Image (tube, rainbow, N blue to C red; front, side, top):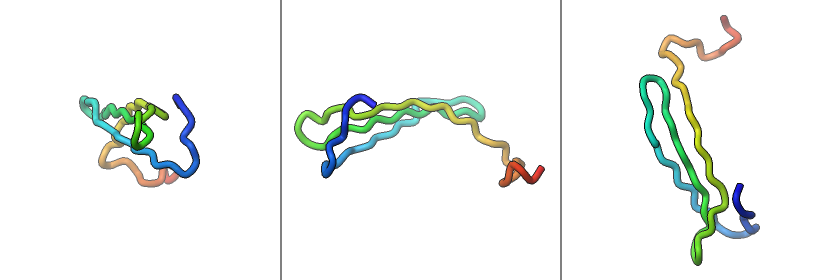
Length: 62
């Protein structure tokens, strides 16, 4: 988090796929206020790993 988001205001969230290789996918996102100076409210980066197609839907099922 970078700044508060005032109650009753709109926030625009934008996400981007930054890259990936094999089963990994790297993304980034930011949230900005709408209108005026559009202050940065929050930003994030994440790396996801895709499960194999034959992975069970329920991890407790064995």
